[in-house]
Length: 558
Image (cartoon, rainbow, N blue to C red; front, top):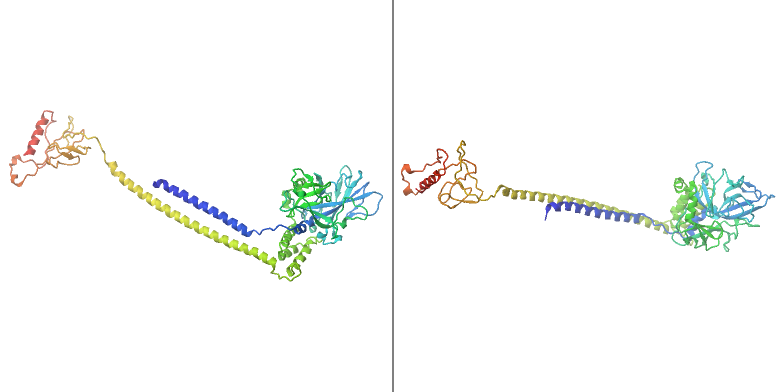
């Protein structure tokens, strides 16, 4: 195994594994905490949809006249005049309301049918020369808790000085029309904020429902069969909110209008199971889709999404929350929430009604049986809180476990890296030791050994050791193989010193071999000198070399 390649792989592999595992575990933790912390929003019942959205549906009384009609600030003047007049009625939906920043701000907006409110006239009444004279906005019975005297929440006076009809209260208001629908504004102060509906382009779960304002008669649910009011028929007789089954919201037509399957009043809103406005009924059983409503609202700068995000309406926000809590049987929280807006708008009495109903549910069950304050609603709320706490504790335990696992893995990784680095250093040291002797050995082609080399004239005579690269050389005296680094022949004790190429030829006198004790007494004249004696004289030529060698061999034989 190559340690140089495995160590970086270990570093990369370990780091990626830890990162991958930690990322997946953290995602699992976030998912668990999200499930534990999020209280599931229960789908509203049909009655819950009516309670939440019904208070935002208003009845409109629209006055048309020939030659003009008198409109007081508080509404239409019923004093008979010589001018013919007509009253039309239909439904409208509050789609915007916020706290005004000036006394003239257009801070409340109503969506309705374009044939009901027509600035050109001649559509609701059959007369072609009729003109729009005024508009009254009436809240329903759920809004006022069946107090008709507080039903009027706004009115506009209209006249046509030229080609355009102008409707105003404190200041001229805006009337915008598109795709058969109309948006118009009216002003209220901060003490008369209104509940309104959000617009959705897609319906929620369940079948969309229409909300009508019908008669109060419990046995017969009716609403005006035609927009024009005649005889003793009055708009105040049709202020009770009712649900209407309709499949109009299921129409997926790409156009802004589609044919509705139900016969309803012009301007009837269609809401989904979350209480959002997803359509509106138009004259001729046509349907205005949620997208068409948004398109119309986007024509008004104050109703665009960016502008709406800056607006505040504590009444609407608190109302939605309180009804959600009430429908979830969380009566304690519902009572506390709705109590906050009990006096925000003195005309809006619905929060007080549901606050009292929630208190009754807290002390008595739905059948009148006493129910302790820690009953089903508290049990359900306590269960959700308990589940949240259990999920939170489990998430913390998982997080602590992840941190411990990460710490252990990091420590193990450091130990493994240190060990591999130590083994790598040891392997490198061993390799250097093995390579060093091989670098010191120089293997050359064997060359014959020379005892003499020529010395150029004028060069000093030196004794030079010849470096022989071959493993063995023959002994000049006996012919046996001698190691290149041996000083003398081990067989005949002939002193062998290599001669380096290029050095001056030198003859070395070798010491005589040691003789047995019986032959030690020899004439002193024949004894070989104990030390090397260099040959004196000039450079030997080729004729003197054989004689010199013969003399040296004879001396060695003695």
